[in-house]
Image: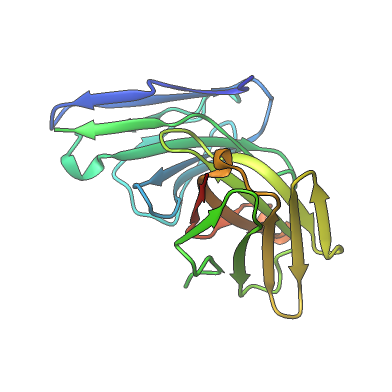
Length: 111
Length: 113
C-alpha cells in the first residue's frame, strides 16, 4: 500500500500550458524530493525540501518550481510547458538513513 | 562527476541462474548503500540495503556484497525469475550530506524463461 501519492499518473498537455504535478505523503517525513527520469536514463534530482518552507534546487537545472507549505505536500509546477519537459517525474520522501520511498510517478508528455 | 556508477547498462540472464549486478563508487564518505528496482511507468521500490560496517546482507533471493577497499558493491539474485526483469538502481548516502541519496545510472536486467 502506497504511502506517497502522485497525481496524475499520465498527462498529455499542449505547449505553453501551466501544470502542477501533485505529490503527497502520509508518513510525516520531513525530507521530500523530485526526480526526473527519461527512459533508460539515470535519475536526476531537480528539487528537494528538508521541511516546511524549505526548498532547494537539485543537480539538474529545471524550469520547474516547487513549494512546501505543508509537511505532507510537495507540488511541482511548470509555468509554461515545452516538449523538452516530456519525461517521467518521480516524487520521494525520506527520514534519516532508511532511504527513500518513491511515488508511482507522473509520465508527462508535452505536445 | 558521477560518484556512483553502474557500468553495465543491461544484463541478460537465463531463468534459474544467478544475476550479478555491479556498482562502483568514488566517494569514500558514503556509509550506506541501497538497491532499488524499477518497472517501467512506476516509481523505484526499495530492495535491499547495507551499512558500511558490514560486507554482506542477505534477504531471501537477494544478497548485497560490499567491498569497501575496492569501493564496489554487487547485488546477487539467485535463482533469477522472469519477474525480476526490471531496471536496478544502486544508491549511496553519507550522514554528512543529510543522507541524500546519490544514484547510479541503472542496469536493465532481463531474465529469459
